[in-house]
Length: 391
Image 1: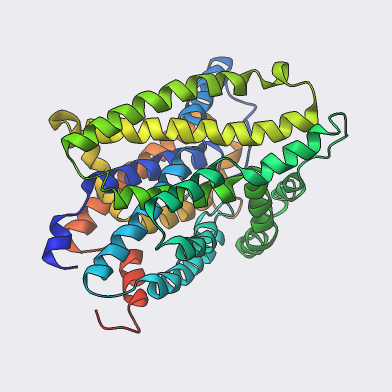
Image 2 (image 1 turned 90 degrees about the horizontal axis):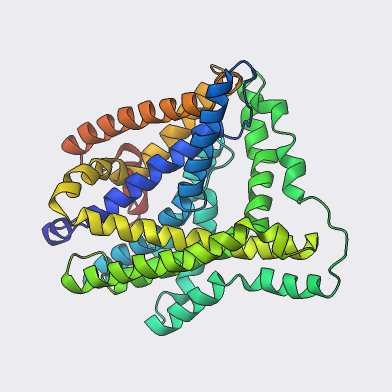
């Protein structure tokens, strides 16, 4: 990293990535890292409060936090590619190798948590390469088409021809139903086997059923465009852009969310409703994600909130290390081979655990980044990326 690149580092991007990581960790803890269970010994008042915490957390972050990561993944690709282009290098081959390494990190993470997103990002990341040198206009329209969920759109058209058809449960349910056999058990080896086989199939099938594959690629491309347009660089022009984005995204989100909540009334056919729900939910999540990102950027540019939000920056700079660490910690806390806390913690207790983990990881990240250029696994990733080349 040369002095100019280091000087121009986008700290707001680090902070957003750290914020997304903390929110993802919150949701994972509430879900007991995929062990859904409501303790029966909790008092009535706590059950009601648990539901409030659950509903609020999932309303704000579910489907949005991963989208922030995907957007910033595309942005990071552009920054790395642009930095190499300034040195006269084509980054695409190196990026492909970098994705292979990310896949391996994903396999490592999946041994502890089957809901890993790194493997999916690594595979979908290859689809950036064919369009990386297209014009902004071409990339934009490809991203828009992907955002519209064309595959599910075609499925919806087909379903509308036979609206009364019987539909089976999603395939992913069968695989998710088998999780208790190994996650709640006391064998670490069986948990690893289950996560890497049944668990990965469950996650891949669910991601396909929810339309995430196309949306992730769409967000990668939008993030790359944001990098080309330098939208995260502080300026009056960009400030106006983020204000407009915040207003428009909120105005679009409100009717989309209303439709989502009333879909049972608006669409009688179960077959049609499932398809519409897949499309509409993905749109709803993305619009609210844009509102969150816009709000974060605008607040980050103020003196008061900058000091507060900068707390997330060290976490964001070590996002790979922290993402895997939270999986290891979560599995150890909740799974049968560890403390088995899935059986005793409701949403409030799980939220407290996530806050404690966030504080510990934040403190460690702050200390580490004061003494190192990169996080522990980021350093390994960087060295392995350039192991065949001289920087």
